[in-house]
Each structure stands twice: as C-alpha cells, then as structure tokens.
Image (spheres, rainbow, N blue to C red):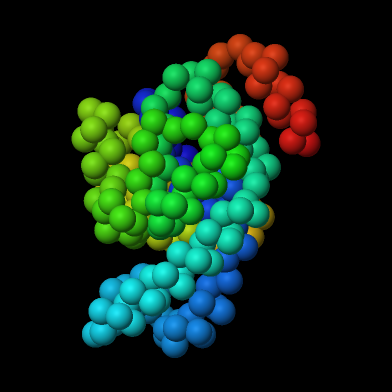
Length: 214
C-alpha cells in the first residue's frame, strides 16, 4: 500500500464514486450503434456529420440529466468529505459528465469542492490532462495527490498523471484492481486509512455522520 502520510490533496470521480448513477451505457451504445470496444465519447467525436454529432451529444446529455436528478450519496461519502473538510485538504472532482449534469448532482447532494472539471474543460479520462491542470493550479506535486474512482479510466488517468490511484470496488472483483496503488471496497475504508496515516481526534460531527450511514 502506498504511504498516505504525505498526502496533501484528493480528487474524486463523481458517478459511482461519491454519488449513485444508473446510466445504462449498454442501452446508449445500442441506440448510437457504438461498438462495445470503442469509447462512447470518442465515438461521438468521430462522427463525420456535425448534425449527427450534435444530436448524439444532446441524447447523451438528456440521459445524464435524468440520471442527475435521481443521484444520491453512496455509503461513506458524507463522512469522508466531512473528514477532508476537517483536515482542510484541497478537494476536486474530475468527471466525464457534462457540466450541467455534474453541477446538478453536486447541488442535489450538497457537495462542495474546490474545483470541478468536466468533459467540456479538458479531454475526458483516461486522459490525465485534467489532473495535471489541477495539480498545477494547486501547486502540489502529483505524487502527493490521491485520485479516487471506480473505473479503469480513473486508474489509468491517475497513474498517467503520477498520482496515487485509489480504486473503490464496491465489493466487486474487478479485473484491473492490481493496476491501482490503493484498493478499497468502500469509501469509509479510505477514510480509515487516511486517519491511520495521519492520526487526529475524530469530531462528534464526523462520528455522527458515520453512524447515520451505517
């Protein structure tokens, strides 16, 4: 396991990392005739017709917005974010969501972060460009930042950026888990690991958040 004692900041994926998502990518691929082995965003960008590309983008955004309206905190999210705020770590989100859907999810779940980057800002993951940009903005070495996600793209982006890749499996035996520096079943395990690496008295506020989520 990577040493977390030097951690100065954390960046998160959004969907199925901090909040729930019910996006049916198989359905979206089928409707768009996108091959399974091709990234759906790359597939849309590669469309030769500008009008078809616009229609496909609008279609994806409409599904993202419906998904945003039903999103909710995942177990451990509230407590971990409260702990991060207590420690005054800079915190960001890098998501493949569109800006409208991402901001809706943050507002609906009362999530506050220092920076939010969506696919409109930088090339989407697995590109590490968004992670590099945040590290430069914060003036923090990439090796001292943890990027947390649930997907192979998250691990690839973090590793490419030289950050500590943290995979949340949700108790699924993921084939790519060995590529991540840190692997946890749920977010509360990451919080526990951070506390063990940098001991601090847990506040009553954080304690009660954890109890409510159990």
